[in-house]
Structure formats: C-alpha cells, structure tokens
Image (cartoon, rainbow, N blue to C red; front, side, top):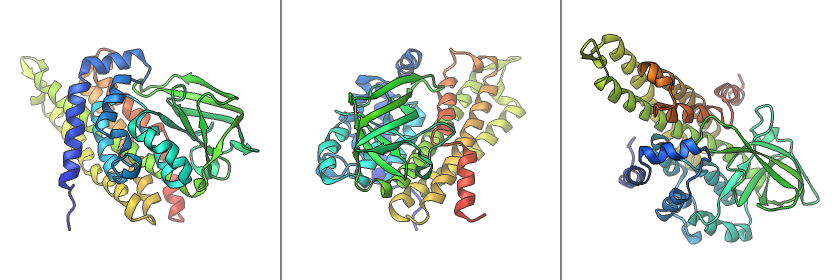
Length: 359
C-alpha cells in the first residue's frame, strides 16, 4: 500500500511553489498586505495561466479534471506562500456548480471560472457562527433572495455568488443584480478580503441539485482550510528556524540554547503528523463519501487549531520583533487565524464530530 503522493502530485506542488517564488516575492506580498484589498489582478491572471482556477473543472469545460486532494495540495502551497486572492471561495463555488448545477449552468459558468475570466465566491456564513446547510436562514421566494450573509470572501469583486439558502438549497446570484448590496468587513488576514452581503428581493437562480451538493461544499471548504493552515504552520517553523540561527545573544546564536531547541522541536513534531489528516480527508472526498464528514471535521478542527498555536510559538521565538508590523511572521499568523475561524471554529467542528458519532 502506498501512503505517499504520486509523481504527478509532487510535480503539481513543485510547479505552484516555483510560480509563487517567482511571482510573489516578499516585497510584493507585503504590498498586497499593506493595501488590504486581498487581491492582485496580475497574480490572479498569472495563476489562471497555469490552470490553478480550473483544477477541479472537467476537461470538457476547460479545466484539469483533478480531485479534491490535488486541490488541497495546491492549497498547502498557497498557505506556505500566503497567496492572496479569492481562491478558496472560487474553488468552492466551482464545486457547487459541478455538484449541483444544471448542464446549462455548467456550460455557462464553468469555462469562465476555469480560465479565471470570471471570479466566483460563496455566501454561506450568517450571524451567530452559522455555516452548516441545515442552519442557513436566508430564504428565497418567487425567484428572489432576501436576507444577509456575512464573512463573504471577495464579496465586492465577485462576478458570481453561490448563496446558501434555508433548507440547504443553493442559488446563483450575479453581480449587479437588483437589491444586491455589499459592504467591506475588516478582517485579520489582509490577503483575503471579506464583506457582508445584503439581498433585498434579489433575482437568483436555484441549483437543481444544490441540496445534495451543499454538505460537500462545507466538507471541501474544511479540507482546503486545513491544507492552507498546514502550509502556513510549516512556513512559520521554517521562518523561525532561519531567525534563531542568525539572532545572537551573548555572542551565540539563540538556536544553541536548549530551551529554544526544545520549543522548535515541539512545534515541528506537533505539525508534521497533521499532513496525513488533510491527505486522508481529501482522498475521502472523492472515494470514501461515508467517511467524509467526520474526516473533514477532524482535519479542520485539529490542523487549524494547531496552526494558530504554531503562530504563537513563532512570535515568541522571534522575541519583541515578532509583534511588530514590520516582521513577516504576521502574514502567516494571521492567515492561520483566518483558517481557524472561517467555516466555523474548532469547537463547532468537534461538536459536529460528536454528533456524527452519536456521542
């Protein structure tokens, strides 16, 4: 039995790492972060040029036709590089269309989403940490949606919104639709913009199989967030190792101090085994549907929680500089905080695990 990645998956990650090393050097990342828009148009187009927006899209619609595990491996690299942009919500909206859309809806939108010509997002979060399909309250009557959604990624710039509705349904709302209003929301991770969306009898189009697709949408999001958080945690450890090897105290690199060695060793040994959690959850998405909800919840709860702990440790080991705006550590600390909170905190997903196990 083989427990590693395929050669193609290794090459996929290598390609994305090479792209980010070339196109997203630290000065460009800091510029995007300082601007706070969470979007770089040239970077988005560059990613589309190597097919990153169409990984899940079947070849007949212009995509690569890969599986969710492949997408998760790319998100691991996104986490390492603090990749800005609405890649997460775009992938989830694409998946919603694939799983729940009609053939006409797929023909209309998937080629544009795969090429990056159109940007899609998902509007599923509501006040009170409401994320799961069976808790959505926004309703649709006579082909129009009314209600509020919060923490919508790239709400003001998306061409298409996939909206979660009461009863676990999904609907499409296009930008510029009447009664649609978006307002930016301040978020901790400035590489990913958030907004609140208000619908007032806004025209919408139901996805015929949206109710069946909605649970998978949540599970896929949990897996991709877990992969992203794992990448961020790995990057934080590497940054911290580089720092302690060069920072000197009493004429000696602090990496020589036993307490520093032990702290770093603890961070690494806690982080590396987490890789298997999102690998297995990603595999389950396409091959073990009966195990998917539990594995996705496990990956989201554990990996994102630990990634935030790694961020705290990295800040501590950087000393006073770790708390400053000028220190690059903040990019990945704040990214892991976003990953932990979006789609529900670890507490919410541990309760979900307990419910699935009839505890």
